[in-house]
Image 1 (cartoon, rainbow, N blue to C red):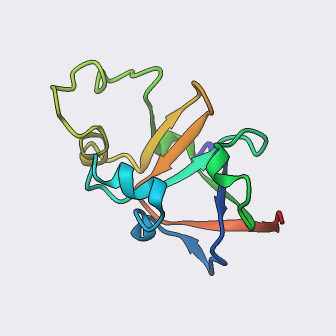
Image 2 (cartoon, rainbow, N blue to C red):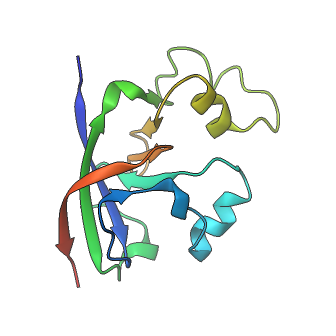
Length: 127
């Protein structure tokens, strides 16, 4: 049974259709993160009220939904993936290879990271 969760994605790009991990690394802040893992990914917030300062001047807020059951909860780590990571092992690669569409965490800013494209259901002009 699907358990949908709402995701919020900020961007200056007028996206048509899907939010795709193929564009990961084009911004300066994601370019740094890209060097840590070769896995393409898109970042989302789980609330629209808390975001990093990079996105304060974003033109658009995209709202999407995805099946929460397909995201690995790294806080709970029920399968011990995080616990059993080896030094220098790529977290995103390991979780993707286990068949998950991404990860989710409720600590800090509460975020989701998706390895697959997701169609947005709403776009809001925020500037």
